[in-house]
Length: 74
Image (cartoon, rainbow, N blue to C red; front, side, top):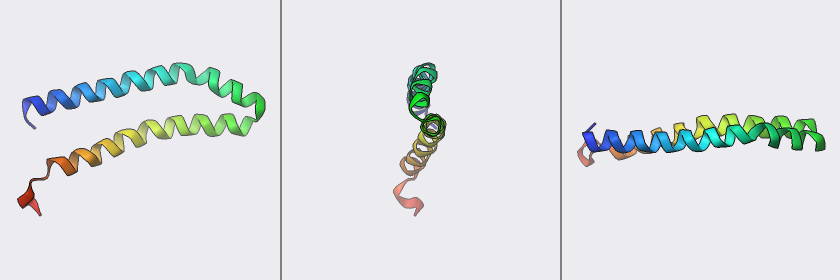
């Protein structure tokens, strides 16, 4: 990985982590509010937040692998 590519990846990961941290700080209030409507709704939203965190990085890794392939790699 070249220097500028590594720096770009680090910046993108930092931005994603900060955005996710803000969401996770707000998550208890969101889940409690939804839990008053239905506990299962609160559980589902909490699970979606956690799953979304990992899915975001998984999708980003897939995208990066596609970008790192050169045309002659096949």
